[in-house]
Amino acid sequence: MAHLAHRALLISALITQAHAADFILSEARPIVESPAINEASGLAASPKDDTFLWAINDSGGTPDLHLLKSDGTDCGKVTLTNAKNVDWEDLASFTLDGKSYLLIADTGDNASTRESCTLHIIPEPKLPAAGEKLSGTATSAWNIVFSYEGGPRDCEAVAVDSINQKIILISKRTSPPEIFELPLRAPQKRGKIIARKSGIVLTNSPSAHFLPFANQPVGLDISVDQSLAAIATYYSVFLFPRAPKETWAQAFAKKPITLTPHGLKQAESIAFSKDASQIHLISEGKTLPIRSYKR
Image (tube, rainbow, N blue to C red; front, side, top):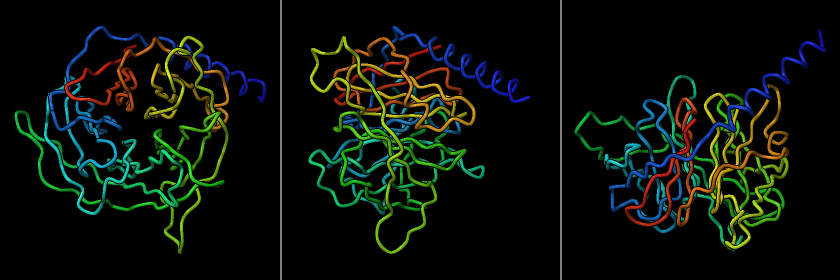
């Protein structure tokens, strides 16, 4: 029986890896219409309708959640009332107890000097009807203030494993990049919560040697079924299949599948579609294209 169970896990892992290798960069390049999305640092598909994408801007921007269609159409925005955009660097979407949420990662720290960082968890705002634009405000349901085991880290790659109720964070400027984990419902005790290191990940592309900082992780997302993670760097996208009962640290320790370079000027955001049949990326800058990998 143990042999059969091991064989079943191996077959499942091989199928997942084969499907991951099927992603092809689409020739379509729809343009982000909204001029307000000018330093896109995070992207997430709506758990309710993944023709909608949520986006945030980088440090110093307004505390806004921007909504757009996957064809680039501007669908408005909402303003987070109880947060400041210190250095927002990633955005994740997930479903918990039948409700959809967004997680904003205020985790940027270029100089690695921040004593604490904050994750804002927001109930997903109601999506607008056809032809309408979103407006108004939103308030976080809970916040997680934390620090890193071993001291401050710059982090632009954050995702949620909603099944195991964990938050995965990957450092940007350490070599190799380090993986940290936090509980999704972290209790707010006196003082800060500690993000614990669980492993390392390799995102090296030998062909990117000409591009400074090419292999630094700048975005992370996990598929809804938790079987696949995607890490964006300034150069390409790396996929990490995860077998049943395997931890994310174990999955990230394996050699990744490297996709065709995305060709974006400064990619910093990545998102799976709800059914994981597409991976979307956008870059910092105004009216730039959405690049998508499709199965």
